[in-house]
Image: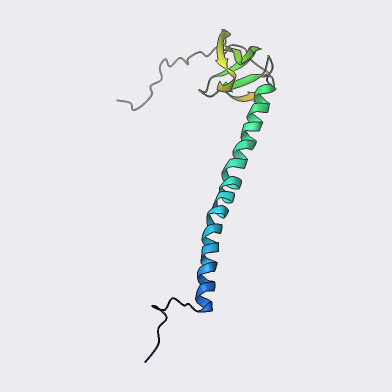
Length: 131
């Protein structure tokens, strides 16, 4: 008759080593997962935040900027966390928080003059099908 060690409370040496190894691996997997998340998500985010902070601190009057809303303008003045920009050909002044600035371009635009766009005259010419 075969003997069983189920009810006796004794185990063999290989079974104990196997369960001890899997316990160790089960503890190691969440730690490895946290390390991977740290390197993949958190560290690049911190680098981006440092670059944005450096960009915002390096702004000066005359720089061309774009806001997070897509508005383009030229910095008129900076006071603490408030940036006043000039927008459009009429040079309308608007106030924004520094954190609302998306990008900064230090290069000056060559032609910042008002564009006069005249519609084409379409006398005698028809667009579309002739009847």
